[in-house]
Length: 429
Ligand SMILES: Cc1cc2nc3c(=O)[nH]c(=O)nc-3n(C[C@H](O)[C@H](O)[C@H](O)COP(=O)(O)O)c2cc1C
Image 1: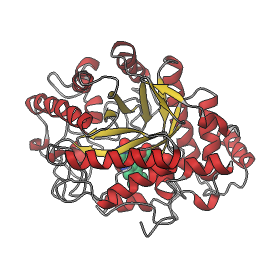
Image 2: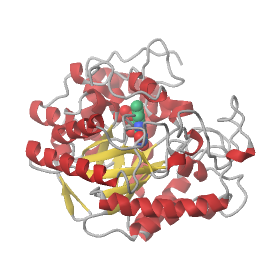
Image 3: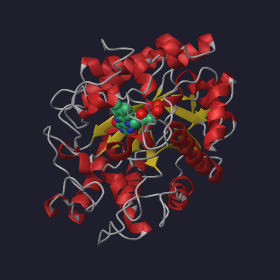
């Protein structure tokens, strides 16, 4: 459908658009809800605003964090977010997304430990509290580029992803490979704790290896077919990571609950349409929360390499995505609400508020107030203005001159393998 780019001057304009589109978003002007502390795993989290994982593409060639990496996280800490969710960090060299992706191993660990201590100290000095720091542990799978060019490791052949780039069977990961990778994630969870992170995220979203296993309906063997097989790898990694859990260290995950591809190549999708079907996500979250004791989960959607508008609704130049960005935001929040509704005691983090620009605090406050979620993770907005949590608290608004404009510039930098940030608001960074 043809639609205008972001042009809303007041919240009422968005309300009108919602009516036209037949969607409903949770809004509230009561921003104080965002600053109510919440106890998570026995630790008080200062507020409901989180920094979403955002790859910065600024490690050195061996995966060490650089001064630029540290500066990004120090700015987040000073900016007041209650939770900082690190960008995807590779747990094994062949699973790296590029030559500038961070890697956690024995060699890089001391550097991470030093950086994490600085991040926490910076939060304490600036705001009187430390941000809760989560490491996103990842294997890039189909999108692995450890040497700067594609070296995909796939769970199964995917006709949609492979339409233009057919892949040979040598790219398929064997069951033996996955068995040893469980050990790698196990080890990485231990390193993550030693590096001073407060939690590890066993990342399962956005088309990377663990997310691809979710839709491995056609894969033979113990990691494909049934629900139990498709989630065997994820649940085993979580189980292993839980062995490191104590009062200082916890296990969480970022879960993509809707891929946006037709069944059987998409997960969270109806068998006969592209509509979401959250039944398996609800079942999986039930296992994670009720059986394994996970207290918090982050919800996201889509595969940014193929349908980026599902993961991060946007307006970009003359390009208009296939759906109105507000429809994408509505899908994200409705899916998140359904998870929260099933497990009211689970702390749920919502994603993708940045399209709303100066109205994103209204969305976040509304989502918390109306019990869609407990936290909201800001991605592109954090690149544009890492100080947004303090700005909203101190000024009662988010200045529209300080917001992300969803131009896609940061995504272009990531795809080009260049150091990444906001090209509009902080081009010098
Ligand atoms: C440049 C860029 C890098 C990203 N890197 C990651 C990442 O490392 N891990 C992840 O889970 N999501 C990543 N994302 C997705 C964001 O965390 C977030 O879900 C998405 O941008 C939607 O939130 P927003 O509307 O607040 O930007 C990235 C997004 C962008 C634009």
